[in-house]
Amino acid sequence: MTQYGGFQITGPTLPASRTEGNEPAAVRSLKNPYTSHMRRSATPLLASGLLTDVGRQRSINQDAGLILDLPRGGLFAVADGMGGHAAGELAANLALDTLSSSFLNGRGLAPERLAAAVQEANLAVLRSAVGEYVGMGTTLVAMVIDRAAALIAHVGDSRAYLLRGNELHRLTEDHSWVAEQVRLGHLTEHEARNHQWRSVVSNALGGEERVRLELYGLPLRQGDRLLLCSDGLSGVLEEADLYSVLANQSDPDVAVRQLIDLSNAEGGPDNITAIVVNIEQASRMPSYALPSRLNEGPLYVDMLLSSRRGNSPLTYLALVLVYFTLMGLVLYPAQQTLIGATGLGLLAALLLGMRLWASVKRSRATLPELGSFSPQAAGPDPAPQPTEENQTRIRPTGSARPTQD
Image 1 (spheres, rainbow, N blue to C red):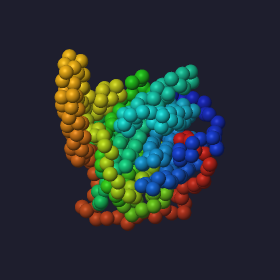
Image 2 (image 1 turned 30 degrees about the horizontal axis):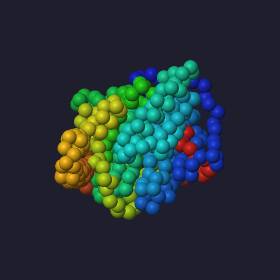
Image 3 (image 1 turned 90 degrees about the vertical axis):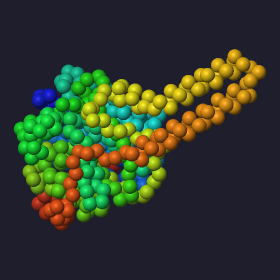
């Protein structure tokens, strides 16, 4: 269970509910807070597995997971709800319901659509936090794979990782009090992992009207493996454990099961959700510039979108050129052919320059320097083998809505 601002809000338990047969087939996730679930992507470029588990010390699963197949990739997300029994479940599932529908119905390029969808999810949680649900919220880590690019949107302390070659890279930085103490040098990573306030997040959906989030992109390669997870996994297992499973188990369905079994074997103190995505085929990059990771941390969504829309001086030059071309056509009708041809030529050159600028930004996109694990120093570990007593039960279901935890 994640806490926001150091407070836990309790509420009555909602009855477990399942919906079957009424959701879009593209949404490949499920609702049932008392069992674990698994789904696999049908997108040819990808293979993916999703699994969520209540853990060994919780009676209700307040995590949620989502896989949404898209024509050129997919949308993947993990949410960790907070606010008591009923409120945490509601917040996590409401956030992923809204995220998926908003992204599908959104317009524009994928980075802007993802940021706008996170904001819609934030508002949905905030507007439902009334009466007995006051104070509820949820973390969110969402990833859009668009051909050969991954776009990460991040709020809270759920995490994303990338296994590339023999190195596991952490892609997100926790929005939490202990993470801030680590950045300031007041705590070590080991101390933070065992700190009594490790579950207190400083940023979450439902906290305020404008969500603060981090949004950035990175190029993908064939053979990459990505992991999204709640802190019930990343807060219990060391990165060496994550690496061992991801590096040695190629099937994403089996990988997520082994990860959750390992977390439960360590006591399963919290709800656990994991999504593993394999990049099966090489593809070309999208035409837009990938958003860069900003050092200042999460930004308000309107500031983030404004910086995305006006991130190139070539955009302003193109608008100025169009303006003066139109003015020339009006003021000098006798020279319309020359003015029009000159204006179109310059505009074509500027548009080409904008495409080249986007290509340069894509080529410069790098992995965030948030820490990585490589087995070279300690030597590779064999893949963990779950024992019979810590096997997680998995039951297929026909539900197609975001996982209720």
